[in-house]
Length: 438
Image (tube, rainbow, N blue to C red; front, side, top):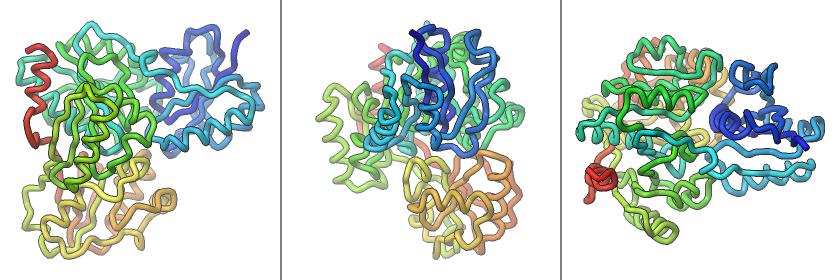
């Protein structure tokens, strides 16, 4: 008998699981996807150009809030949980809804969805969103380039636009970012890699992406998203930990899976974290994955004009996903404001425009700072309106993208960057050389 299936997701892992596990599998019939976490991604359709011969009309995408009704309406037998950075308890709450409505609940094993490459693969994943994964990925690219390797990054998917135009995306210039109408979240990941003179791929069909990347690479760097597991089977699996959120490494799905699979565990942000929290994370790694090599690393906060911050009333703009489903209360911008003597961090809430009001309502833990939300043109417009209305002397833009390329700001903007720095021996370069046999 054919089993009716719903795939629960957030426009990333869900599409990948469908492509590699369900698309050509005659045992299953996927009736729909459900969507959550990312604003305005439900109500779309996974297009027939991507869904294959078994789905000539494509597959609808509904809101996660309709899950129980959809199970009953379509006689669903199986629900596949396919998104990331979720508390273990919340995963089981979802499972309870599913089983009460009459379906089975599964999480597909990581190995079943890892594609194999003919080239070496170094993966960089994390136990939570905002651990310092992207800066670590860039450091891996730099180290491999110094080793004389041709390196291509492949980024976890962020396909929030026209899926038919995002099957395989290659980014090597800023013009590529504009051509694909990238969101702020996408630009945060792609721009710094392009600035290095490197190439980064992303999209929807990661089998096709892999085969294109293999044509120009000796080594592929998997640049993970959220705390998801790799889409490609790694030869070296690096996992990043955040001591500012010590304890989260065993409390979130699938971050704990990443910890258990890590070859190299990097404890990031050592320069700004409490020493006892660093020790706590180290002990957790040693207890649960004693074979993992542990590296300590700093997240160096760089702005180049520290004196411009001192004594100023600043509006801090931080990376959006880190603050929202990453649940951090602050990022590098707040650290820079405190470290370099800002007189005040201005709370933007009195001036919030449009969709940003919804963001703060959904994530009330966000403090006196502004997440760089930009999943849509409306959100980008609301972000600009909020920044321009906020009464401050200076904007500290700690998002990795250059906001002034996207919006017009009526006050001075100082970019705050954060980069990987080794904190102790062994270094990441030493460990990569050893693991790759160089």
